[in-house]
Amino acid sequence: MSKIKGLLIRLLVLVACAGALVLIEKIDSKQKNLNDTYFMYATVDGHKIQVHEQDGSYYLFLPGYVSEKDIKLSAEAQKHDIKIMKSGGIATVYITTNSGNLDKVLANKDYKESGKITVVDENGIQNVNLGLDYIKGRGNYSWNTWDKKPFKIKLSKNASILGMGSGKDYALIANASDATLIRNDIARKLEVAVGIPYATTGRFADLYINGDYMGNYYMCASIEVGEERINITDIEKDQSKVFSRLNQEAFEVYETRNMKGWKLPEVVSDISGGYLVEREFVDRYNLEYDDFNNGFVTDNDEHFIVLSPKYCTAGEISYITQFFNEAEKEILSASPYGRYIDIESFAKRYMVEELIKNYDGGVSSAYYYKDKDSVDEKLYAGPGWDFDMSLGNYLDWMEFAADDATGITELYLSEHNSIYYKNMLTHEEFNALVHEFYKDYALDYMNELVESGIDEYRDRLSASAEMDSIRWAYMYKEWGYSTGDSIHYEELKDFIKERVAFLSGEWLE
Image (cartoon, rainbow, N blue to C red; front, side, top):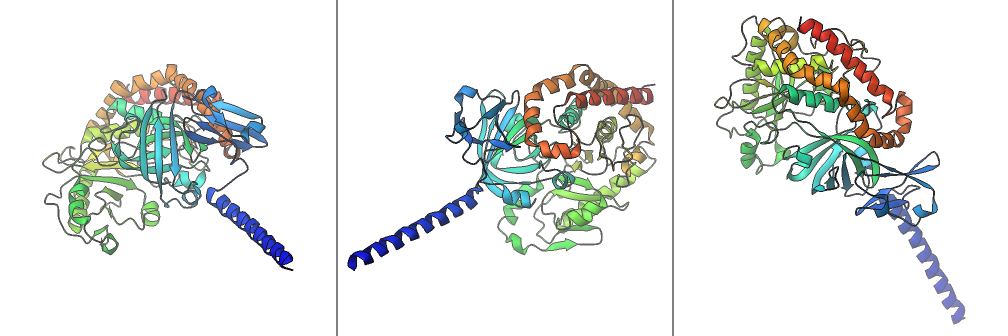
């Protein structure tokens, strides 16, 4: 009887152990977000890269700097026929989140998850290996429309990734709407060529998050105040000496009919600068930025978000609102410019947006900045941001843009456009500067793109673009295009030819 009892006890123990193993396996599976290819991966330069399964085929997408002989396939991967594809000529970004997956980030644009980042340049040299304060979603239309998502990252400390200037904030732009992947880089290099203050270029990179290949991305420094970004007086830095000791959860909003700020101590003696602001159209200002308590509306209904300082006191938000109202009077007047605005930066900003026929020009992601009066009393038009919907690349509902390379938009054809540039174009001095900057700086750049530049882009990005086109094949099929197809580069060249021919006839004759 005791033997039977002992056998029963051992059997019960075995059943309990088996159940525990099943439970552990389920928990482990949930934590790791296992998929069919979880055990199919390659170890590459110390990083694990997952095999991508699509329509019964298996792909391994490798960074350009890695040699196939240096990879080590997992035991499960060795059992399958895997097509190995390799990028080339661009950087590599590895991001690992603390949870080991990206589910919550993809489910909620505002969700932030910490982790770490490693960046390797196109030659295989490690550039950055740091902690991440967070990775989160970014963008509005681009985030909500395409499966290939854009991201914002904040480093744990300042660093200059791939020579883009020291700072913490960077963006990973997906370029999902641009079959050539290059319009953002073209526009940014045009800004640099023209001499727009603080204009910078980004870098193309193959992005891997938690071992999953995410595609070809364009990495760039975010527009923020900093010595190697927008180099103006940093009010926020001075405020933080006091505000960091306060309970931020207890901060109260200061609000009037046309401005929002914070009921906080006035700790900065000179509130004349610096300020970094972004112009937004009214619907986004009112709805999507409802919780953003730093902003103002001018006398002529232009809406602005104050990006820096993050916490504008009542005195500061009142000052910058009044300053913009004075600058706006100058913009809309028939009097000569120069007291409140830097006319050259405005002319350069307009010329770039008009030349590339940017759909968002004068609508959204339009940045302006002002330093303190003892440094510079004027308002400057700063660098731009979103350029994917430009140079002939527009969605069906963007009626005024269409695919027509002719026409002067005055940045005023959309119902959401700013009133500023249409009025500035009535000034002879402003027009003369636009034409001068086009002739002296932009024309050669655009002609060089047509002659050789776009072909060089295509050659350099071809391997990465092919990997990207497979990784996001379902998305591209839905939208009717694919990255890397030569026809899209030829269409871009044709648009630039026609646009330059038209504007040269308008501006140079």
